[in-house]
Structure formats: structure tokens, C-alpha cells
Length: 188
Ligand SMILES: [Zn+2]
Image (tube, rainbow, N blue to C red; front, side, top):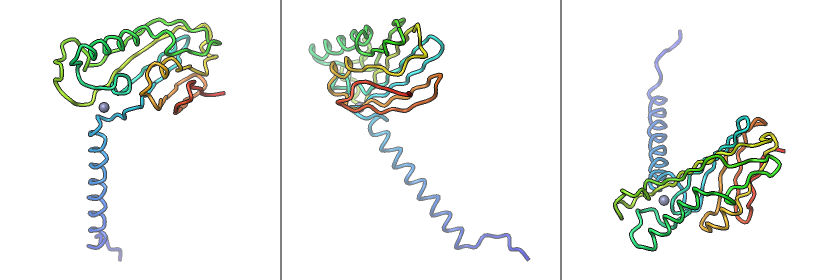
């Protein structure tokens, strides 16, 4: 005869494992939440090549670019914030696609909620990100195998690592770039 019920011993094992998994999951979540889900000194790029279009989305802890993550308080901070947004909205030399792909910048945007004009100075001290999005139209997008980030890394010394995901017609790639590397490369 088969016995359908689970023994009390097995049940308590399962319960303990379940509780343990929940506690570990919560700890991981808390660690993530403590930094706003981002790591200072890092930034991430989502690179997509679709037909003739190259799109790069950048998400960066504001600290990685600016050194602070609150709304600007002093005149110097206000100036630094404005200079950062202006520079990222005119990204010539910051992201340089492979010359072989013959790409021309089509659009650029950069924004951070912490730097919006109506954000109260010193309003909150949470972590803050900056998001930027760029699009190029390329004469030969299929030839694209690299983006030179030298201008970005030279201009913003706090950036230590760049994690990139690349979705291209030749496949999906994940690349981590660390100083002193400056050129993100993928595929062959
Ligand atoms: Zn932060």
C-alpha cells in the first residue's frame, strides 16, 4: 500500500527551507533597496541595432557623473548639474560608434528627476539616476562592432565600470568595460 501523506520530518524541512529562502530573498532585496538598486562608479548601457538604427540607452547613478545625487544646493552644484545635462544632450565625442558603420546622430536626451527645475533643493537624500537615450542612423549598421567611450570616461572620472547589453542582428552580447579600457567591443 502506498502512503500519501508526507512525514512530519519532511514537512518541517520544507518549511525551514521555505523560511530560509524568504529571509535570504528579503536580505537581498534590502541590500538592493539600500543603494536604490544602483552602484556608484558604474553605469549601464542598453545598445540595440535594428535596421539602420543604433540606439543607446544609458542609466547611471547620478553620483557616477556628478558626485552627488540630491537637487543642486549651491551655485557650483547648479552649474555642474546644468553643464552635465547640456553635455549629455550634445554627446559628440562621448559615444563614438565604429567608423565603419557610418552613423549620424539623430536624437539625444538626458534627464534626471533630481535635477528637474521644480525639484526642491535638498528635498530628499535618496539615490538618484540619470537616464539618457541616443539614436543614430547608420549607413552600414551591420558593420557596427564597437562604441568608443573614451570621451565619456575622460570627462567623467568617477565612472569605473560600464555594463553593456548589446542586441544586434548577429546576436546578443553582454560586455563589462573597466578602466583603463575605453572601447566597448562585441562580436567578431
Ligand atoms: Zn546612489
